[in-house]
Amino acid sequence: MTVADNRPIGLFDSGVGGLTVLNAARQALPGENLIYLGDTARVPYGTKSPLSITRYAEQALKALLRYDIKALVVACNTASAVALDALQSSYPELQIIGVIEPGAQAAVNMTRSGKIGVIATESTVNNQAYQKAILSLLPDANVKSAACSLFVALAEEGWHDGELVEAIVKRSLSGLFDHYRGGAEYPDTLVLGCTHFPALKLAISRVVGDKVSLVDSAVTTAAVMKKQLTERGLLNPGSTGYVRFLVTDGPERFARVAPLFYSEAVEPDQVELIDIQHFA
Image 1 (cartoon, rainbow, N blue to C red):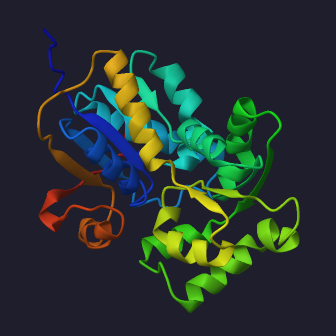
Image 2 (image 1 turned 180 degrees about the vertical axis):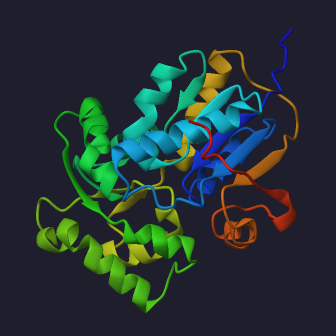
Image 3 (image 1 turned 180 degrees about the horizontal axis):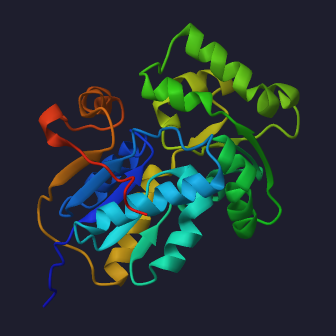
């Protein structure tokens, strides 16, 4: 007889972008209880130093441990790129999943030519996390990346489409695409290497064209969550789990922006304001 483990799964991101991962997790694991922490007081992480990002990630994890989580999803590409190894090393008993490896696997599965573009925050690009992950799976891949940290601000402000957004996207992606337009090096796959970026998917697809496949790691990450929880006997096979929302700033604003990333309604009184900075 399988014993249900109804302890919650924790997820954290710098802001609202990680709600795309939460959304996918709700669909893949409807019986799981989920606690989402958005560090909205310090968004974006992508322009911060590795030392600060690691400190923020450790504080978020320690805050979530108060809720007796059975697993952690680092639903932030920047934190996954910079701090995942440190978190896993410090908490070997806890199942900790990042979004880089699932996203890389999805890109490798999707590419036809082996030419893959990656857009992410400055920290993720500088860390070369996606390039390393993709090349470990497909050594002959040609991976090029571009920092698009401004996309985080657009997503957080709800600027997801329109002529101005497309103009910003086109300029930001010019180094990846314009130089190779029509040439042999043109990427056929583009990894949206930040959980905020799927909010701009329509604008991005219009800029790069329909011959380029866009990779959103949220669904792949949820599949990895399900697989690893199953292997460790941590699944809660109930019918409907709860979702709890925690933020470090602006609960009303979080609730207002959440529907752009998350398919379920979020009311302001569902969002709890917490202080995580005292977790050293």
